[in-house]
Image (cartoon, rainbow, N blue to C red; front, side):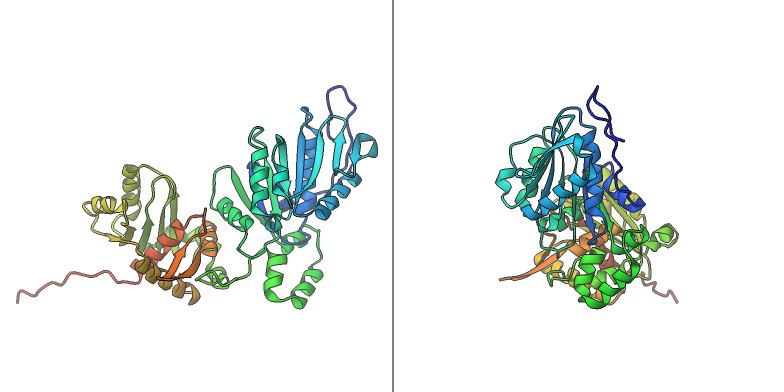
Length: 409
């Protein structure tokens, strides 16, 4: 049951039931929630329930937006809403695709085809449906409408390669960006939740090309050739179960990518078998960063980014810890160290348990330029974890020299 405006009779509505993982994702308390989901996993129905509850509890007669890539898709959600609520509780406008409830709140269904038409209003909350198929400018416009209200937004969609803003935004959320959260709903989650039949998913896997099935049913991007490591190889190296034993396995090499405010300092450790043992990511003043790195590294061999402002920081560390060595990134040295990391991933010589690090690896790109190959994160994303992992592997691959003792005989 949802309560309407003060003094009005309550609206009794039976909302569709949501399975547990679906509800956790859509009702996440974060302001901006990005959900990559399988087709028919319940992302649209779940967001209609989430936004419907907000519309019915609105005591300020505000607008609530549902934004879809094209007008026909907005119509689909609009028609579903009309079936969810008693006809006596709302007024509809089928031309404008609006539903106005007795409390004065308006549910508005819009197309993202012309982003300029999305500016202007102060919106209480928003859903961007099939976000991977929307233009980035539409997200910019919707985000601006939520500024005054500080309203929440749910962004949902299938995975559609890596060359779209939604994929990159999901990686930001997955990395722990402030006010953001990330979730994934696969076809097998929907099977477990009673929404889809397992035999239907099995049939789709047999009938569809592998890369299409992975995108549509497993929410995994296809490898478009722009990733130097190979998406399948990255997934093969991902073993979240290793996190439980990370503190028990001795670290034999650390990699440290330094940053202060815009990027992140990231410390990655590997054991003798190339399995991840540590993953620390933070932003602190240089003095605190130096102390934290030295505390974590101790006497274990470590390669630390000494590029630019990192040079005096590394020199200060070296005066306190002989285990620290500097590594300067240049176009040539970065290419070499990334090619070494690519070989290790493709040969399954490392194992990673941190999902944030996997997200960075998957988003990482290379492009051929006039002067060589440039390796970096896409614009707006970070590659601190990738660089730290590459540095850890670089140090791991080189045995620690032992001092030669001359015989006195």
